[in-house]
Length: 84
Image 1 (spheres, rainbow, N blue to C red):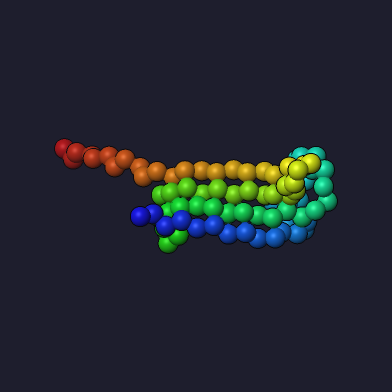
Image 2: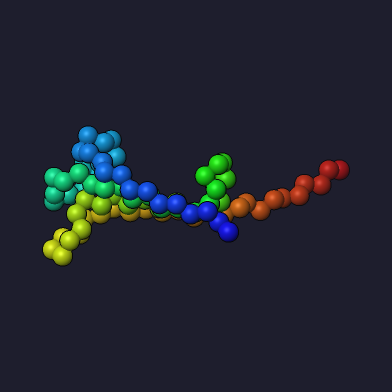
């Protein structure tokens, strides 16, 4: 079994990442976003698993403003080197 986790944080508009998103994109709301983190894999050093994050500014029937990204980590193939 692979451990999984999720967390939510309420950010404020002074957060560096929020400022960078607002600088790059025309975000129609002044509301500060909620940050959602999800992932799988061992948190103690192993990078095998998946990591996802989402900045959710607004989510309702009229409007949906969010930015998300994710990455999957896989083990590298070990290469055998022969010594001559």
